[in-house]
Image: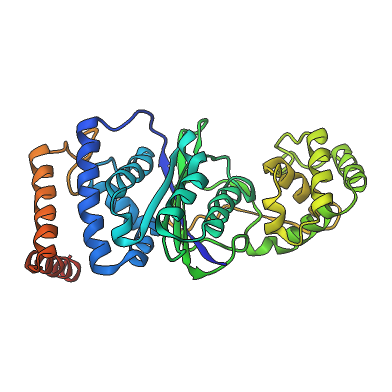
Length: 362
């Protein structure tokens, strides 16, 4: 399967919602900007830009959301979903999912769009579920996934933007996925990771974790009694308190129940193991612990972080939003789109020339 994760972003965790007057404008401007990108460059380029954590952040800033707020992710995705909902058939693109309970409706929404655009939804539904499973189970960084937005095309290409929260540190981390480059769900799926915070995490998708992935899969497929006995022995050992896995609470009864299931299904690889229903963070931690202590297959504990304003921000940073200027921006883009549709693309060409000048002189 063609895919790759393109980035992480860490943001301060902010509560609340965007004011209605701002969200309505964000929806209109997001639609106008997206329609230009889709019309000029096509759906594939739109997915590439959405999956770029830096471009995504910049778009949120242009639309007026606080550059440092976790709410940028959820609000921007919501504005894009609302703004593009009736452009799907024109450009062959759709957006599913969202925040909280809405995120759990993603598979059904993908199937809905599959009927509308006449494509098979199975691979996209799988991609949606597996990207969420990897970021919640295989990369255990203390961020609980609560937002999942899926961007798909009728050609079977897709991008995922999802976000997790850590209520103790009051930080959020955003994860980006893209299907346009050949990669792997469980082997170094990220291209860039943006964060100011690094921690001691269990990273089962690191290249260095390959032995642990193989042994964990092998353990999951063997008779449960043997694995439980090995785990009980480990619990009796006096290991250093700094050990990243032992700092978590693993329920032996729950672990044994899941092992019965994995033994019955006999997963052939780590990706298949993650796909087994019921396999969660505790199961992966326990398997990783057995893999390391019993078989010497040590997983990676390296946090995969590599990187640490147009209309102002809703909270007044870097300066308050000028609603008149915002409305003028929307009007200019909407007029450019209308005139381009009737054969006059001068305004769009002017915008492109301006972008080139800005890039070369900025």
